[in-house]
Amino acid sequence: MTVSRFYAVALGLLFFGMQEACEATLDVIKGITHPIGRYIELTVESCAYMGSGNVLKVQKMLHECIEHLEEKDSAFQAVAVLSIALIASSEEIGNEMVGRTLNHLLQYGELNIKRAIPLALAILNISNPKLPVQDLLMKLAHDSDVELSQRAIIALGLIGAGTNNSRLADLLRQLASYYQKEDNTMFFIRISQGLLYMGKVTFSFSVLSVLINLKFRVC
Image (cartoon, rainbow, N blue to C red; front, side, top):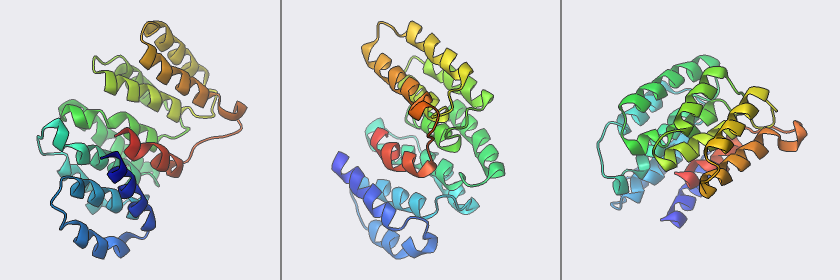
């Protein structure tokens, strides 16, 4: 399954930013009966329309999140959530509107959808630690679901990557104290702290780097 996800990313990058040029390939992918087919389809489509602000594609991705599925069959829904952020990542107004939409998904979505929201927020706010986003991610970092809390912690590092934000540094220190006996979670906290001070505040992240390194590997 992991190899298939890397294949999906590779195929998506071939159509990066090409929008309608991917339609013929999507028609072929729709013929795949295995559940990975929907995963690949959404991956390719999100790469092709990344940063386009295409409202119809955002609506399609939201529609994919409506179904109530078993966790083993719902991997494509996490891709749909991240795709919403990727498509809307190029403009400030779309960014804010999608932020509100993600809040609704967080309240009413299934657990598999909620787990993707921290990274979606990170994509929308890469190296841009807005206070409301910090507060929301900090709340999610204390969630009872381990995967959700760990992804929220990584997202905190991504929104503060290379910024040396003092408030975010304090939040991560609080999390380190709270999770001091949880080795796996402490690993994520240390990574986030490293991201915060990345390159001694001489580097930052872009949406593309997060797409390649995190999007389909974590989900």
